[in-house]
Length: 474
Image 1 (cartoon, rainbow, N blue to C red):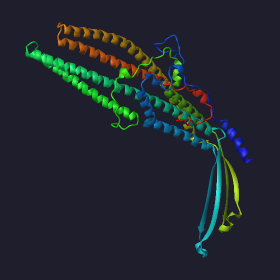
Image 2 (image 1 turned 90 degrees about the vertical axis):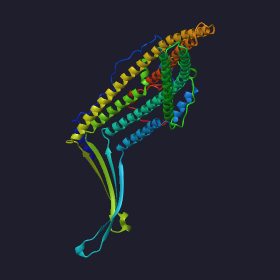
Image 3 (image 1 turned 30 degrees about the vertical axis):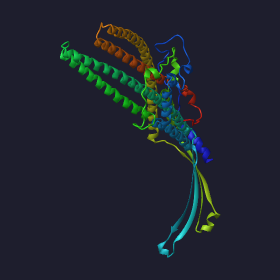
Image 4 (image 1 turned 180 degrees about the vertical axis):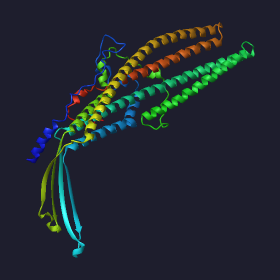
């Protein structure tokens, strides 16, 4: 009867507290209907980017480095450990709705001094079961909030995975680009040293002034300095690649290679669907944290309602150990706790509502940043393509000039100095083409990263009321 009365009283008091919550909705963001530059022909998200998108570069060495990084990178391992932490916290939150039980035993020694008696011993054993009944579902909402955090942590791992693959790819491209730059710079340096030698001989015969010789020597010094800088940058990039793959810097050395020969530039599909951003892990994580804040706000509101507890206790005591278990006492004590004058409860509601606003704004900011990332990558790829066409024409024209000057040298029409000048111009244009190829590769990686890198789309709305099932594949 008392328990029934507690429930009735709790129901009556709950009518004085506003615990209503609107249905969960994804925070509003500006619509994105298409990307620029766009094409009339559209493709599906699944056909645009596969999960192992980096294989489109056609380089087995890159594939091996990425697999090594996935297995050995400590950042990605830390993110995976956070998933396990979040999974355990779901179980911990769920335990808040379960009964607790305690069992204790002891002996009490007592002496009364003015009665001349010795010590008396009293043995006792007692147990207690306590259950805070989740009548209104406050604990359940906390569990659902932790479930959302679990899924957000999974998305964080996917974002870290995508960032790792992107960093390994761009760093690998940088190392190969520096290998080509070192080779081209060495060729340019050799050419300029030959020019300096020619000018010195011409100076000896009075054909050119000493200042022209000194000027060419200074150019050789500049090119040598640049070559040393390229080698330094190559070593640093190699160390960065080692760290990304989980190898101590200095213990890994990537063999020299040629970027343009080894890595092919994959085509970028036209007509990218705007809905592809549903695959982007950081957006998924941000929305799950909006859902988490929504559940925590609901839990905080429900905490304003009365709580009901049931406590059962039982035990036995005796002055003799052999008679301890011959008699027992037990009882049941239901109770109700009404938070009438607890300002921290209502203050916590305001706190969770403000945190929900922060989570919504973070989600909107993440979406807007994603729009910019994709647009920037597309703009850069389009510019790279147009610049590559111009550079290819420049290289082709300078190649014709260099061949003609070389032919004229054999006929004695021009000097060796003019041949070297033509070769130097051609090498400079070839370096621009190399830089354009490397930039195109990096921009393509950034596009894959901006579009979510092949992860499947996630409907957070569908998880708003779903049961928690931890994924152990990570």
